[in-house]
Each structure stands twice: as structure tokens, then as C-alpha cells.
Length: 315
Image (tube, rainbow, N blue to C red; front, side, top):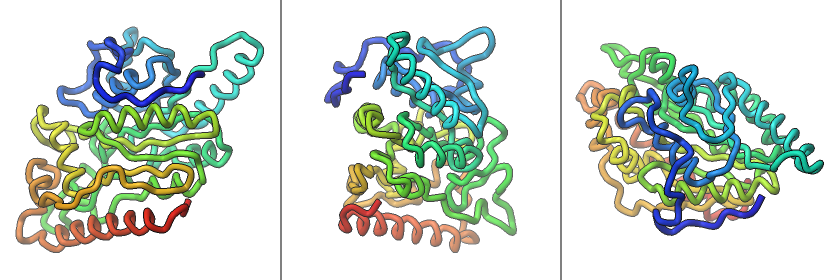
């Protein structure tokens, strides 16, 4: 497997994606854009796809949108299956019976933050050589917009509805990158659709690192259906998440954290919340306490990342 070089412009990417049109995902679907960029970043790979929106919407029997080897597995075991495929490829390629392709495990935040976290932890601890990519749309969108460990504070879902007593989810997002990096793997990073070049190059870098061990990416992939915004706003909303500091862009490379996109003058978080009906209620005066809690968490989290960056090799 030869190294993948960074790209600088769209012309550096293949003209044709191995993720084909005709799937059943929604208009403006963030995970669909993510899947296409993955196949442009790594044209030859084996994708191990956990149950979720991408799996359901791209492989309606007998059709498939994938022109590369693709495997459907359960919510909880895509990391375990990826580990098995890596072991098989290492054996077969050593015998000259197969090409040693990169293996990419792909799952949503439900499969990654919650249901499949045990299998992911096991694979990372064993240093199994594959890339895990989480397309994070901040809820269990495929099964009915239920809250997940990735849902932000105050967001309204079907299991954390915003009402008179409780204004949406009452817990902050799980620090998954911190959990992953604490396994001392070679590479972990966040990315989002707006910064597409950063995202593509991080995917390629992650594949290169699989010569040493596993790599992990959390990609913010907005969901127009679950977040309840107009479909054409998907990329703009991913930009707003970054510019409000709600979704920091950073990487942990060989134990050293580095912030990749600095936000010196953050945009008001209210601008981000008001364009989504899942969070618009936080702007009502009665929900001022929850809004303030969210703002405080955003500032605390950003300061935490800056402190970790200054501290040197901390993972």
C-alpha cells in the first residue's frame, strides 16, 4: 500500500467518485457528502459499514451505491469486523493471494459514541491497522432521531424533547476524541464538510498511519431532517459549528494535540442555534440557563484544547 500524498486543490482528486448517485439518502444529507469525500480521498479501500443512515440509504437490495468492496455489519461490531478483515488481508497478501487494501470502518455517532464503543476500544488497544471514521450527525437519525452521546446540550430529539419542564437534552457531548486518543493510537482528528480539503487530507493521513496502527476521525455531518433546517444549508451549518467554536477542528498526532483551525473572533452561537429547529427553543427567555450552560461548555472545551496543545505530548 503506497503512501497517499496531501491534496491542494479539487483537481488533485479523482474525476469520478466510487460512491455513486441514485441512493435513497435525503437531499442535503451530510453523511452522503462525507461518504463521497471518503471515496474521493481513498479511491481503493474496503468499507465496513455499521447499520445506520448511510448503510440503509445506499444499499437497498438489490442495489448499491458503492463501487468498492463494502460490508454491512451491526451497530456494535464494525470495528471487530474491520479487525478481522485486516488480519485476513495481511495473511492473504503475504501469500500473494490478495491486495492489501486500506480498511475503513464507517459508522454514525450512535454506533460509535455509544453502541459500538467497546469493540472500538478493543481494536484501538490491539493497535489493529485500520481507519475508523464516525460521521457524526448528533443523534440516532436512522432509527427515529433519538439522543446519543454526541447530541449537544439542549438539543431536541424524540427521547429528549424540548418542553415546558426540560428544554432538550441535559447532558454535554461525550469527549470521544479524548477517549480515543487515550488509547495511544498514532492518529486521531476531527473534521467537517466545510473544510473539505482539511477533511480529505486527514483521511489520507489516517490511511498512511495504518502502517503503524489504527487511526480515527470524527466528522461533523449535519442532518437536515433531524436538525430541522433547509437542505441547502448543510455545508453552511457545518461552517457555523466551527466558527462558533462548538465543533473545534484539531488532531492528535503521535500524542501531540494541534488545533488546525483557530477561531480568534467566534461568531455568536445564537446564529447557529436559530437556523435549526432542534435548538431554536434555546433562544427563548425561559431557556436562558441552558443556553448559558452551553456557552460556558463551549468556552471551557476550547480552553481545555488550548491547554492540552501547550502541554506537549499528553496522549
